[in-house]
Structure formats: C-alpha cells, structure tokens
Length: 323
Image (cartoon, rainbow, N blue to C red):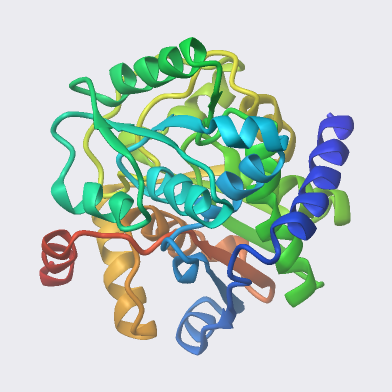
C-alpha cells in the first residue's frame, strides 16, 4: 500500500506546481467558534473560494494541462451537471481548448447556466447521471478525444491532491483532516500527500448515510453496486465505477469513515454559515457534521476540515437555514 501512497503524493506535488498559475491558492482559516466548541484548533480549508466554487477545478486543470498540444487541440468530453462540469468548462476556457459537457435532460437551469458562464458547450442526454456518463464516454471514444472523469483518473486525483500540498505549506503540523467523500478523488489525493508526509496524520472520510457507497465498499473489501437515497450532499451522492482507481487508494489512506444523517448535515451547515458568514453546499456540510459528531477524535489537536464547495441553489440554502 505504501507504493500507491508515495506515487500519488509525488504526482500531487508535481500537479501543484503545474497548475499553480491557473487556480486560487485558497485560504486556510482558523475558526474561533469551532475551536472553542471542539476543544481543538479547527481550521477550514476554503475550497468554496476556488474559481468555480469547488475543489474540482484542481483536477480538471491538471488533467487538461497534462495533455499534449495535439490532444488539447482535439478537446475533451465529460458528463456532469454539477461542480465537475463547471470546473471542466472553466479549465477549457483558461487553457484555450474546447469540448462537450453532457448533462442529464432534467438538469436545473441554474446548473446549466453555471457551466455556460465559462463558455461550456452543454449538450443534454439521458434521464440520469449514469446514462449521461456512458454516452459521454462513447462520444469521446468515437471522436478520439479524452473523456475527463470526475475521479476515476490518476491525473485528476493528483490535481485534487494539490489541495493537500497547499495545506502542509500552510499548516505543517496537521494532526487530522476531515474530507467529504463521493468518488474518493479528493481524499485519495490529499490523504496520500498527508500519509507520505507523516503516516500518523489521521484521515477521516465523511459520507451521508443516504449515500455511503465508498464506506460500505471499503468495509466489504470490494466496490459495491448499491442504491443511494436523496441527500443534501448531492455533490457526493451516487455510485462508484467498477474498477475505480480511487478504491485501493482510499483503502490505503483513510483511517476511518464517519457517516452522518440528513439532520446532522443541515444542522452543521446552519452552524457553520452562522459562525463563519460563509455559504457552503451540502457536501461541505457532511465534513463539518462528521467533525461535530466526533469530538472524541479531535480534542487538543490541529484539525483541518476541507470545505469542498459552496455551490448551492438559493432555494435549498433558504430551506436549510429555515430549519
């Protein structure tokens, strides 16, 4: 397992240098309110301040920058109605390449407009994410262009890991980190960087109970095909591709998975927004909820919570804040 950690950490360091001029070096902020409550030094890594409002820009940028000039000229295809789609559109715009972003037919207009705000070429296909993704893969194959996966790609994972490289520069003596987990790319990249630096740093994977596919899969020792229920954390919801490269990496770096219910997520979002005056999405609320649920893990320690994104619809945010 140490080989996969060292390889991923080295790739993340290279990615951090490669993409430095294309992304925001986001703030690491100590929270007085949460530190006092938890009896620890609690820091929030504000990836919701990233250009597109989430960490996803790191991986998309690294993947496109790794292409040859010829490959970049041909462009890419991807499938996402959320943060990944906006990140790919933004990265393509910055790097002067083109491509297609497929979204399900009933995707909200707000999400489509977010992608189009970066000149993203949006095309509609399918009734759910899996249909859309399969179509995008087939489109990429037929047109001999890159399919840019949101997580099942070592170069994308290395890009997400650049967040961990920044964190160690900002706070070298980190004791533990809480990270929301969907496909496992962010925690895989950041966790590898941390474990390569100091194996004693605790890496906690945080998932909604309504869609804890990675946690259950790690317990089972194999990727499970299992349903997900609706969750505030739409950014982490859904299944994991068979054979995903994130699975063995998560096995290697995650010390413990913490699952939280919808009430805990909503309560955590309200508490954070009230204390920090900073809007966050449901996936970020998952990591904060996990922190709040496990004071036993953090007392007296230097703890980082990655605020993975801040893209939330106005009506959903209003509903959460209203309780």
